[in-house]
Image (tube, rainbow, N blue to C red; front, side, top):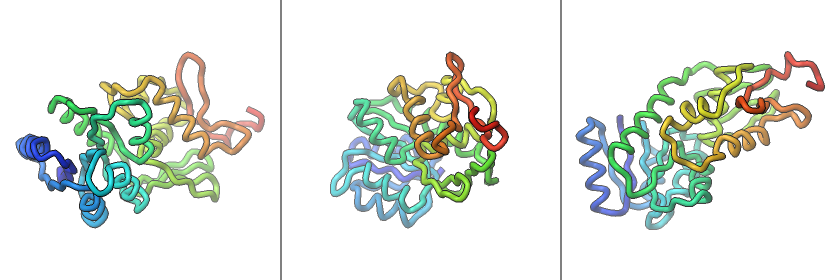
Length: 229
């Protein structure tokens, strides 16, 4: 993998570069947010490891800029800030995962592998469930004629639902496939992101992502369901 590593701590940057290179990754190292934004927008990478607290502009702004430009490169945030609000902020900016410092290198490698697996599983075909469609080559969904912009995590969640329409998916299945099996984030992350999706794709009267009490969630094809269901 070609990895952009953005870290302003010289000692940690050197450790990351050496460890990733030993894993046979190609690493480009930058130390401030402005350079990271420029490189991230003008070059292609398989993954970005992005510190949140950076000189000039922070990692949140870098991630926002990449997503606004249509860059779907997976981003793993690296930060010492561990509050729920900080994690939500990073995920809302479009990050795919969030690793809290200090971390074991084995944990970081596991997160990288998990993100890579999710990307590899994606097909290039447009997915359709009724009048809802999702193009894996963009960060947009369509609800009828309306174009809906999605964050990276919203995209990953909707993609997983659209791979399994009309099938009840448990919270554990969602965490394992959209985050990863060892995700240690705040406990209601699935509920939070299901609500984000509902706000963007529901038709106002009926829910496309339905809660099945005690079992999980299911993506419904509203075109095949009777009105009032």
